[in-house]
Amino acid sequence: MGLFETIKQFGITITAPDIIICLVGLSLFACWLLKTSLGRGALADSVPRRNNMPFYMPFIPVLVWFGGVPIAILITRTLFPDLADWQNVFIDNVLLCIGAIATMAVIIFIARASFARRLKGFGLNFKTIHKDFGAAFVNLLTIWPIVIAMIIVTTFVGKLILGQDFHLEKHEELKTIISHPQLPVRILIIVTTVAVIPVFEEMLFRGLFQTMLRSFLDARCRPGPALTGSMLDARNGAWPAIVISSVVFAIVHSDPGHWPALFALSMCMGYAYEKSGSLLRPIFVHSLFNATSIIAALYQ
Image 1 (cartoon, helix red, strand yellow):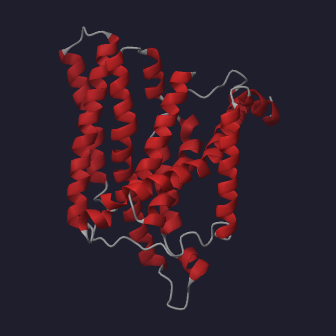
Image 2 (cartoon, rainbow, N blue to C red):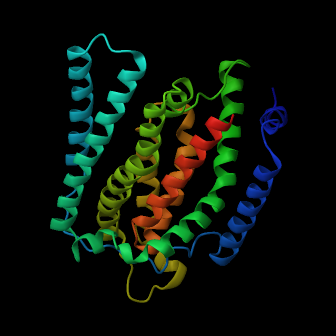
Image 3 (cartoon, rainbow, N blue to C red):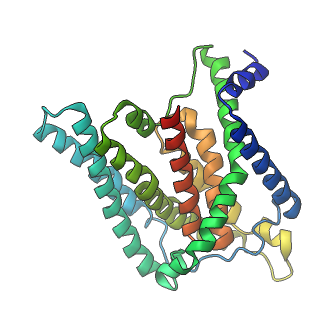
């Protein structure tokens, strides 16, 4: 199956509102490219977040997360082996929420101890919520056609390599919410994926990892005083930090088929963080994306 046939097959599921959204997104992306000289000057005025965080610090909450949650789930399954499937799913998501909240507490402690201006320097200034939410909506609209394009290309390459039966699997939480109609399970999954996980993942990947990477890279490519504008943007560590943290963000998700689309989304969230200095903006982008995915899965 050629790329055109893949697009045509994918287009069967596309509705008129989807087409309008993609056209609006493409227009916004084209305006961004023109305004920023194809992105070269997009982060010329981005200010690094001052911090004294050592390079190993972001790995501490990773150990808390990947060590604590799987162990808690394993212990629970051992203690309660006879629960129904939906009850296991419910308990797993409860533990997921508790683990994410506990890890967020560790991240907040690190941010307060390591960032100048503490949580405001980290990017958590709740006075900017209204502005960040509106900008996040525009950011998501802008990147949406790129995410769709990544899904189409991934499907085409998958069919080319693995055969015509290849198709992208839904995210595990989307499959769970579809296959379990119990109201407590669905409410908990919605809360987890829309409210808890976006905050946790953005605090970790953008707030800690991306900041650490930019601080490390800025120290090695800091421009001289004569460089300004797009030249400054080319020499600072903002874009490399966004790219590296986006690669890490994509590959920690279990399905490789989702990596290209997740990378594109993560680039958008990383850019939103560097451009605004607010961590709320990528959190809102992430939350809106997850909410849209859940609505689409339940509607289908």
